[in-house]
Amino acid sequence: MLLRACRPRQWSKNLLVLAAPAAAGVVDRPQVAAQVLGAFFVLCLVSSATYLVNDVRDREQDRRHPRKRLRPVAAGELSPRSAVRVAALLAVLGIAVGSAIAPGLGAVAVGYLALTASYSLWLRHVIIADVLAIAAGFVLRAVAGGVATDIYLSRWFVIVTACCAVFLVTAKRYAELREHAGPRPMRETLRHYSAGGLRLTLVAAAALGGAAYIGWAFTRPSHLVWYGLSIVPFLLWLGRYLVLIGTGAGQAPEELILRDRTLLALSVAWGLLFLGGVYVGH
Image (cartoon, rainbow, N blue to C red; front, top):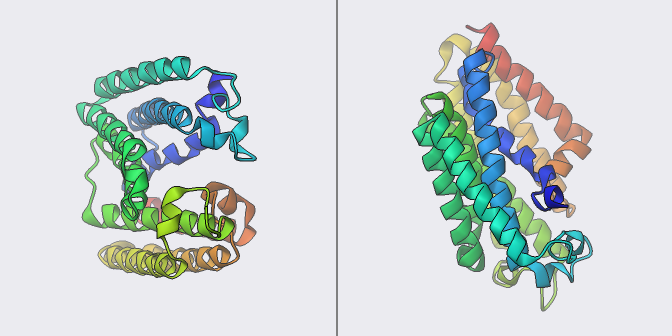
C-alpha cells in the first residue's frame, strides 16, 4: 500500500539522471554508474515525498476521479497524517543521501522539494507558471545526473532539455483540456487556458528545441555524421507527437511513447545514432 502511494510507476521520469552521463560517454564507467544509481535513488525518495503530499492535498478531488480514486490516500487505505509523516521522512532521507553522494546533488534535492512545494501550494493555480514549474522538475532531474557525476552541463543540453520538458507538459495540459472541455474542467487552471494558446506553445517549444538540437549537433564537426543523422528521428519524433496530441492523446507521455510504435521506433533510432556519436565517434 505504501509503495503504491509512492507511485513507483512514475519513477521512470527519474531516468533523466542518465541524460548527462550518457551524452558525455561516461555512463559505462563503474564509479559513474554507481553515482547515477545513487542520484536515481535520491530522486525517487524526494519525488515520492512530493507524491504523498499531493495525494493528501488532492484526496477529495481524487475521490471523484475514476482512476485516481484508487490511490491509497483517496481510497482511505492510508491516513493523511501517516502520509505526511512518511513524506517528511523520505524528504529528509533524500537530502541526506544526496548530500553524501555530492553536495550539489543535495542542493538539487532541496531545490526539487522547494519547487514541488511551491507548485502544490501556489504555482499549480497560476497559468503558465504551472507548466513551467513541472517542466523545471524535469530539468532538475537531468541536472541531478550531471552534478552527481561532476559532468559539465552545456547551455545546449539545458536548452534542449527545457524545451522538450515544456513541450511534453504543454501537451499534457492540451490533452486534459480536450478531455475536460466544459464549464467545470477537472483542473481549475484549465479554465484559463485556450486550445489555440496551448497549440502555439507546443509549436514554439518544438521549434526552439529542434533548433537548439540542430545547433548543438553542428558544433560537433568531428562527429557530425552520427549527430547530424540523429537530427532526423529527433525532429520526426516531435512531429509525430504533435500529430498524436491532435487526436487527444498525451495525458500520460510515458504510456504514449511506449504504446505508439512509430514514437518507439523513432526513439530507438535516435538513441542508436546519438550513442553512435558518443561512443563510436570517439
